[in-house]
Amino acid sequence: MSRMPRERLERARQQLEEISESDYAKVKGLAEIVKPLRSFIHKTPDDHGLTDWSDIYFQSDDGVSLEGWYIPAKGGESDKLVIFNHALPMCRSGFPGHFGPPWSGFDAVEIDFVLQMKHLTDAGYNVLAYDIRNHGNSGAANGGLSGIGRWEWRDCVGVKKYVDAHPRLGKMKVGLYSQCMGGNSQYEAIARHPELFENVLGMCSPMVVSMSAIFDAFSELQGVQQYQELIDLELLKMGGFVAAEMTPQLWASKITMPVLMVQVKDDEWTRNPEDGQKTFDLLGSSDKELFWIEGTTKRFRDGYNHFGRHPEKVLSFFEKHMA
Image (tube, rainbow, N blue to C red; front, side, top):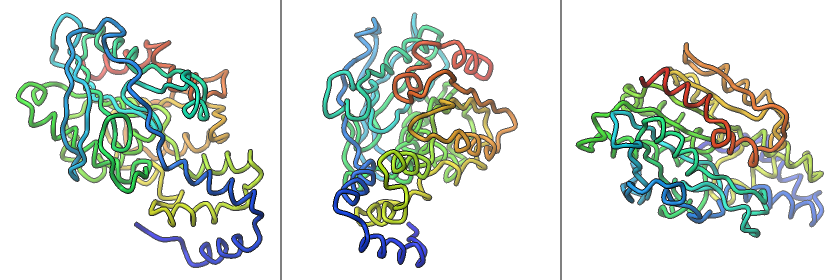
């Protein structure tokens, strides 16, 4: 883990001396985004008529206990598997913002990932979905903090090793649906262990994001945009990573498989479409597409739910590369 350059540390120290108590509370609140709120499993495959599924459990590459589901394709297990992961602060079933506080503090909406899994199984794909560390029913690690991929890549490695070692799953064609924090994690896992992912036929990559973009947008909304160095210091004090370290752009050049990236163009969480565009431009893939969700600013309501409401784009991508 790298540390802040000396000049940024000195600037953070100066900011500590000048900041008001109310603004400091805002800065600390922003930094605590990396303390993920656990979303509970508010739906199971049964809720969408998927009855032939099973609970699974395995270990991350560093030994964290991970839990998930295996859902076979409609009509019986096929030879195609999609590994499905999630965003912060969600879990394999999605996000229960419609249940009120504390989840509604992010957005008072439901995100239904199980519906998206049904789209996949109806189209002939087996699905393996799991909770990343510090989320859902998986184990705690790293002091309960999220590295927005910088620790969680080990979970992506763990699930792929589980699949490869499985007597049936290990023989299947594999695709990835890796979103936001889970997508950041996937990029780093591929960069660190390319040999594990050589057989992956394609990755759908919705909503991957750099934390610098989120901190910049949220701090501007709260009137503390001038305190980016202090946000970084608070992250370090918790034992986490500074904002510039939490980005898929560090690893994008190592991604060479076909990629469908999906972003909300006018995302209110980043207010910066250039961040997604830069990540896309850095991808090492020769076969890649960036699909912009337009006509909305809502990352949670319309970004994460887009596949559930409009499955055609994602299904067409997987059909092209996994047929």
